[in-house]
Length: 84
Image 1 (cartoon, rainbow, N blue to C red):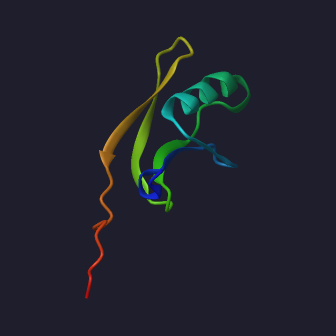
Image 2: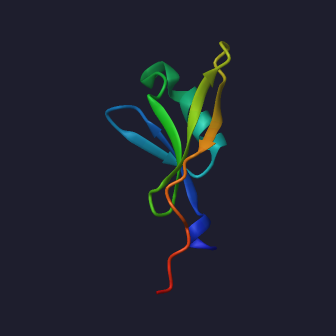
């Protein structure tokens, strides 16, 4: 597997953070732990080097189902390095 394409979803609850391999795992975690932990303060996607790719909006449909909606891509310079 190419290491430069490995990503993880991060949920920030303030006192701690949780990381997940997929958005569906993160959504399930929010739904299953909502009564105990409440809604996370923030959610975002990181690459293997810890660079934030984009933020997620956390949307509650009112029936206990949560959806993470990806925002705009965060541009942090070029992925290419100069040869010289």
